[in-house]
Length: 429
Ligand SMILES: *Cc1c(COP(=O)(O)O)cnc(C)c1O
Image (cartoon, rainbow, N blue to C red; front, side, top):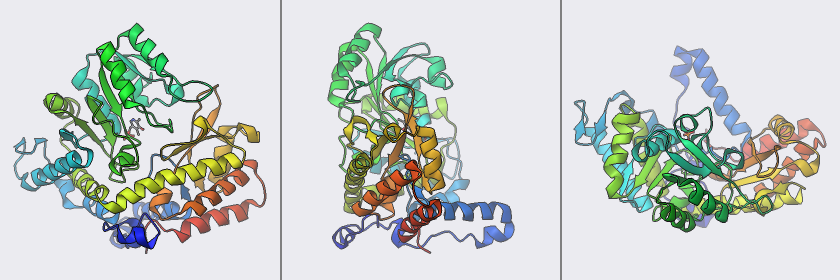
């Protein structure tokens, strides 16, 4: 179970990683292909002996893994249910219809497209549906936590569109809505994007809607990170405000790697055509099945408990890291993300990450809202799925501080991190 209290366990019918046996039998693969089988075993061991603090990662359930490993992987199903370019799509149609129905119901959306291969593919399709090359788009600037698809020079978005970037207030770290409005007035964007890879607070969707309306712009919410919190009622939903909501299914949402798009009926045909045939060919139907399974799990009371615990854990972690001397951007978090600046400890972000990795704590560096230094981005989605509690979060912060300060015996530190991970196995057996 993602949650460890007996009451929460009773409220949570869906199976989950930590109380169900690992579904995969690597034996046959190991015999046929020892090289790849061995790599997969080693990766499984890595995931269960280190702490997964990468904010974009999680542990999918055995049911999601089973759907991913099913023979539906063999099926070609270009098009949409009832209108395929291939024969034999009865089950593919059934599974996609179920995934769409579940996504619409989970998020209260009028339309869902569950085919995007990734979060980036979802954003590409949203731009393709609403924009023409050269159009101006306003999004969070990359130095403040904008994603690659929000105008990075090496990404299609930066090459094909004219991006303007908004930032955050350097003191509070919060989005400066007056600046967003002023930029929208000055640049008259065709679309405004809200959503980020490292902003630990909720975007104010109502304000973004208001600014977009004033500018005559579409509002695209890129909710790749918080979509699971939204499903579990632990974060506000952009669905009532945004014209299009893009997301991944593999972050807090805990499904397979992939993307999805939600929109109203009036944009539904444009979105569907932008996904197929404009930006993608055949959908990955095994992944669509796994998305349906994940949406089913996310609709359970147990998942609601999980989503709220993820946020509670991030708050405990942020406060405990602050007590260890880290500077926490925005002074805390409303989400699963915590951004900690190690500068007060006299260590820069990249060096800090190396020390943490050596101790078995796996995480990313990220841009900080001020200056050029890198911060440390942590997330609590994976550690919460594996059953850790608030005391474990407080302990992680202490281990974190010791690792970054390079204090004590490195071997003992690594052993304690391993012990913490191994007491909470993501997959039993
Ligand atoms: C993760 C993320 C994406 C992209 O997801 P991929 O599946 O890696 O392509 C897009 N936008 C935001 C804000 C993200 O956090």
